[in-house]
Image 1 (cartoon, rainbow, N blue to C red):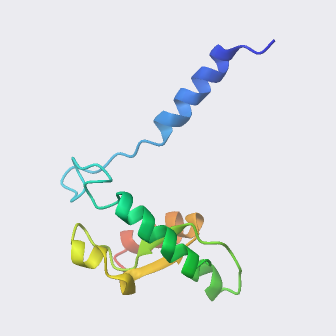
Image 2 (image 1 turned 30 degrees about the vertical axis):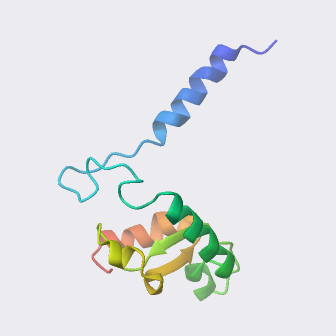
Length: 111
């Protein structure tokens, strides 16, 4: 017999671990993802963009064929809605590239 209490604690841990802390003073502080522009309109645009650009551009540079799952803003928009919606500023990335290489570039001031 499986004890659901054990499973319940694991589910709670995984939900809590996905909560991101935003640094005080950041343009994002106090805002939900929808308030930052990542709403239904964005989800539809993202879906369409990934259909048109299915491969990670960073992986492609290294000769790898990896499915993209993230639409990244090449230049961080920091709340600028004109830059946010400018498709020439978008690129398709896989999650590992977005969460490692791209974030390191931004932290190092390379973007």
